[in-house]
Image 1 (tube, helix red, strand yellow):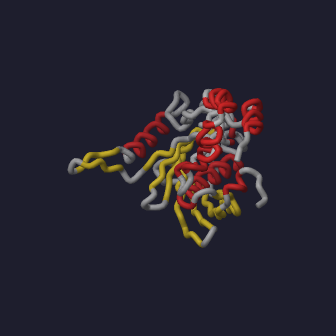
Image 2 (cartoon, rainbow, N blue to C red):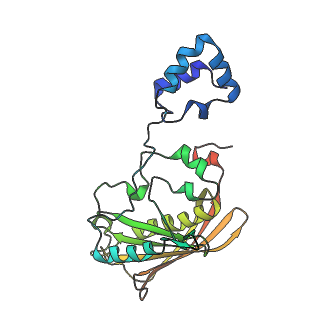
Image 3 (cartoon, rainbow, N blue to C red):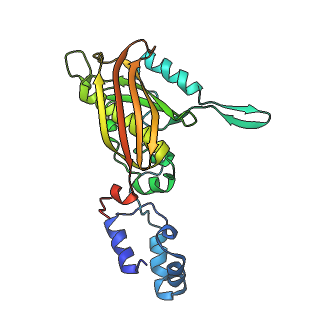
Length: 260
């Protein structure tokens, strides 16, 4: 049970702004505070203060922007059309694909992740979104097909990802493979962490090119989720990279540094 002294410290530190008082306290504690004349003033103060420093409506970084090439727009529009909702026999029917907003975390779209996402939604962006300049690094959008247990990422590599002259750095490609395969694993299995990532580079990827990162579920064994991945040109005629990945389901405590 949170006492008033604890609540005061939370308010002073600003460490939990944005959560409603009812989300922090049990019903018993709320009744105790509300029925005590001494606590009325404190409740008024606490209930009117924002308890979470982060925006409740984070920006979606996977929306089209001026840095996207015509090819990026074309492929995006193609997959986005598959996400459209149709009305059939008076009932709303969703397409087989779903675009995943590129917020700080996509965990709320994972199995059982909606409650966890409220705790870890943060102002800081994912590693791939840390550069504010549009088009300089990782421009991408992920579409997932839950029925087929696979996803496709449309990826455009920016100028800061150069490795060999004129080509994308292998580490940047590995980052995107880890991001996309991890997104699919998390979507299907809930919170996961990368346990193993094997990559075979088949052809160098030209800097600034647009590619497709195809990921699919191989199998799930207990806490282990196995994903296959390949990176191709948008017409799928050229193979750049092949990969296999293993993700292990984790408890919520691991995300907050708990060893229990």
